[in-house]
Image: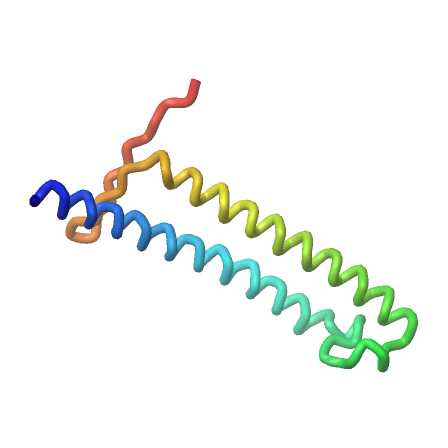
Length: 106
């Protein structure tokens, strides 16, 4: 009974740490994109309707959308790798400490 409770608690701790890590990575991505849009968005008419843009702004917006998508895809791919990596660890939450059992790679 106690062992099952401890295992369940360990899984909850692991999930909590993973969720926190994922949220931080997402915040970094979104914050970086927002900073670029805030400082350089005028180049592609950020906030304007596409039909209101000049031909040059449309080209820049299209390039930005491609770049933005690549950044988000890469970030989401890395978040997936983080989740996979977490599966190799045993994480126990006790008095705000974490025990990591590292495996040696061949």
